Image 1 (tube, rainbow, N blue to C red):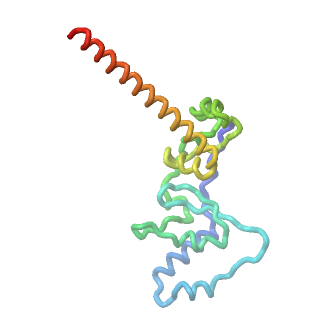
Image 2 (cartoon, rainbow, N blue to C red):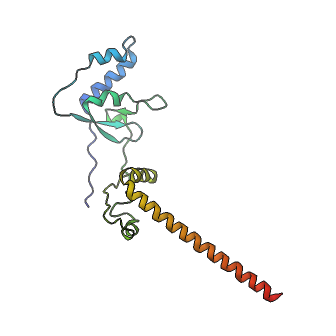
Length: 183
């Protein structure tokens, strides 16, 4: 499977203007959100214009439709800083992750999944953020297959634990029998 290049990090001028308005509205007094809403001009054409907006936490580019630019650029983190910016220079460098979905064809679990009847479940997601993101992705995108996989893993765990307990029981019996024969 050919690896796709990350899209070019560019600044969209329309989004930049919305960000400037956001920044200016914080500085102006007496103009509330209701007043700004009255000044908004909405496009009514059938074409949805999307532009890149960048996360200030990860640098990830998100394509956002025109009608959502103001809302998305207004989102703040808990520390009060804005979560998204229009200029990629104001965001950290985005690093592509390499955690694959459990159901990816190159997943280390692929043989086990094929064995339990999930060979037809295939997912091309190969840049998930972490093992936690992988779990959330699996639970949300592949809920039924994820439950089958979880049941299988629990069955394997239970069987391993039962085998260990049987070995311990056998060892205790052998120790007991050895103690009886010496006495």
